[in-house]
Image (tube, rainbow, N blue to C red; front, side):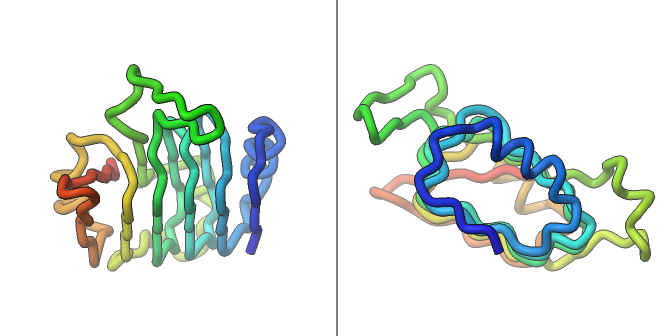
Length: 156
């Protein structure tokens, strides 16, 4: 497990994730990384991101994934300056990849099904709720509400 607490430097984290192809579990808290996060591991089973407000896009290659949690992540809001990036208020884009160059190294070649996706108090692309509800790898998904409105999640 990797815990990342209040990181402000994006490049070292992206470099670490690029080389972490045997990562089994990832947990971060208050990871302030601007731009895109890419996870690619044939053995990743659990991915949890809590209070990350700057990530624009997350892509995940994880044929063994069992759990994906995206909690209290409000893309477009910078709590350190109390500014809102109104150009990006639609939310973060999340991609669950069904193919990747690491697929050839996946011993059984199977993609997990029955993934539990949890999204709590996060801002994610509005158009994606239909995709996650129909995605063949998702087993359990409960769309949350926050402040009376629905917040959305996407997996492509």
